[in-house]
Length: 65
Image (cartoon, rainbow, N blue to C red):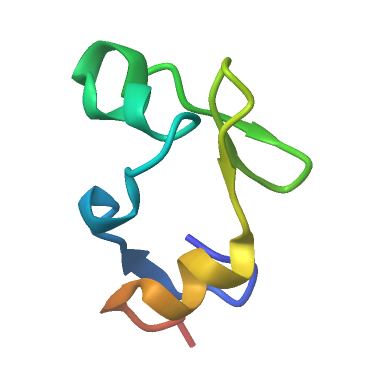
């Protein structure tokens, strides 16, 4: 859920290329995701910008009124 109340689902599989993102293909490592600096991050320093996640995400639920 984003600050505006939108719930979005993001398919990250196409983004998991390169040295930093390759470890995220392992479900056990991917599960170590945490919030850092207002976005999602992993212990190896991989992170994804909130703006990217918002734009790439498929709308699941609009904000509640």
